[in-house]
Image (cartoon, rainbow, N blue to C red):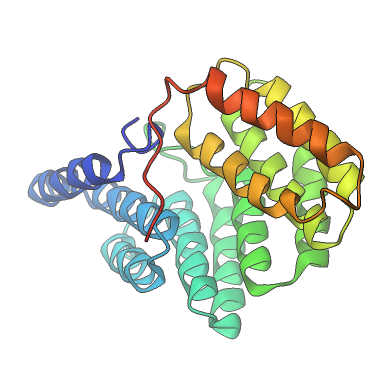
Amino acid sequence: MAHDSGDSTTSRRHFREALALAVDSRDQLLAGQVHGSLSHLACHDGNGDAAISHATDGLGVVAREEASAGVRARLFALQARGFASAGRTLDCHSSLQLAEAALAEAAASHAAWLSPFDRTSLDIEVARCLLRLGDVTAALRTLGGVVAGEPIGRVRSQALARLLLVTALVGQARIEEACLLTHQTIDLTHGLGSAVVLDQLRHLTLLLRSHTSGCPDVPQLLDRLRDTFQERSWVTLPLPAG
């Protein structure tokens, strides 16, 4: 909740305290799960080395646990994101393959209390890696299936998948499609108090500004985005780096 409200400092402190308690409890799956959360925060903050380190530590913790397949799938996917941030393409794809293999095991070994990590979750992580590595075509292919099949109840997950897809569409200069999908995402997230989603919308604003003169849909969308940020100003946003 702290992370989604834009307070990475507090969320990082919570997870570090949680990790110490998980280690004391000797619950290896819980410790691995918290390592994954710390890796996710590092990815979000752009710290690829820390993301790799936390994911690798988590994998070491859960390696001997019989019911660890779902946690391992998430940790391998997060490790891949770290490798993508570091430009380590081969290592990234290798970790994604290991995540795929672990996810195939997970259906038969799921612990009820673990955060869900399913096919959709993995596809979103794959797309993030592909975009980071510059493979926009493959990212579009992956995200197309996610957006078409995402359950309606997971609004935040839907929104993040759609915003990744918009980023990929802009990367291929498919601006009209990007604008339409952004409008749909704004509608979808009405009332959603997520600073992470708003931060992604702000990033898209920057990407779209360079297409103002080339696509008549862009100025109208930028006006709507400005109004959206004003309407949702109650959501705390993280300060931009630098």
